[in-house]
Amino acid sequence: MAIASSLATYGVGYVARPIGAFFLGHWGDTHGRKNVLLVCMFLMGFSTMAVGFLPTYRQVGWVAPALLVSLRLIQGFAVAGEISGASSMILEHAPFGHRGFYASFSLQGVQAGQIFAAAIFLPLARYLPDEMFNSWGWRVPFMLSFIVIVIGYVVRREVEETPAFAEESKQRRLPRAPIVEAFRDGWKDMIRVVAMALMNVIPVVTSIFGAAYAVQPGYGIGFDKDVYLWIPVLGNVVAVLVIPFVGNLSDKIGRKPPLIAAALLCGLLSYGYLYVISIHNVPLAIIFSVLMWGIVYQGYNAVFPSFYPELFRTRIRVTAMAIAQNVGTTITALLPVLFATVAPPGSMNVPLMIGSITVAVTVIAAIAAWTAKETYRIHLDDLGHAKAMPMAKSEYEVLRSRPVDSGGKAGRFGSAVL
Image 1 (cartoon, rainbow, N blue to C red):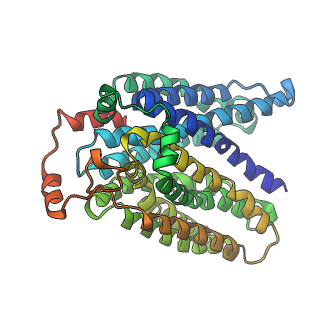
Image 2: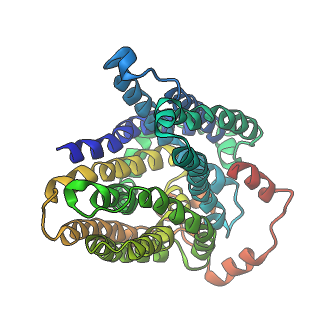
Image 3: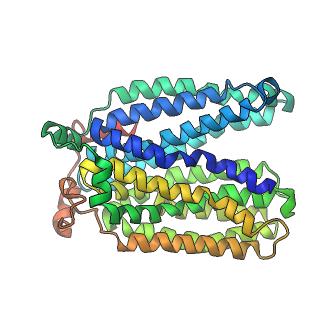
């Protein structure tokens, strides 16, 4: 019960995501991609910084954990609009034939941010005496969020609104109720995105349940906890290198092949990953986690920032992606509790049980991707339309081979990525 409860705290921040998706998706489609990114940044930045100033339980009793949960809910609310807003922003700035490559940088930024966070947190945890770290050291990384807020505001303030949204606004075609239109016109693709977003089960298995299975005394494996502080760091370092390559590959062969391959291979690799933990093999556990999470999973992680928004029209793009993606990731955030329930300490064949659930989930994601429309050769203005036809492959290759105007779209793209 203690393990299940601790894993449930991981899911708390995800509870507010579908709610945030409704509000922030609406804002992004009615007020602009730039505006929603500023709103998300301030909500996330100040709620994260506030964690560093929380009173302790000894000072205020139950109010302290209540405040922490509240801040986690605000963080979940804020991040619900971040990925969909950023992906739509970059996609709508990117030149035709390079949308997959450019949009992949939004997720490369996520992985790089996690490396940066670990670079601050791990030395403090390592070198500060336990008493100092527990009293004030842990607060330092949260307080440093203020610097990120300032830098983020300066950068995002300079970003131009996307031409696609600007044209919608100029022609007075902005939707009054993008949520209604999204469910009315894009519900099939929204269901597909929900199913594909279940791929978040892989980082859950790698760094959440996998860590509990490896280090919790109840399971009897006995890995050192430091190992599971470094495994996500190593995976993210590799991911930062792999993501642009996969994004560029998706501009050559399409969005669906790398995503489907990643889903099926990651599901199979989860068996091996959990098995090497069960036999107490630390080096192999690190190798499998880096292979599954750092390399293969990026076939999904690098592609979805372009594929998801490409499935929807400009007028509902942020709303439809935000709602569907965050519903899917919220479901996977609750899976660690299911894992700990069906495979509690003392269970036999934990790798088989959890691996089988993981494979089932990734197969669902692969089927959803297979049934979706291929989008990489469809013009931006035609995306999301049922009758839109992809450009001929030969013509597409000619357009894609043309140099990008560094003073035009590429320049706007640079600001959008930042």
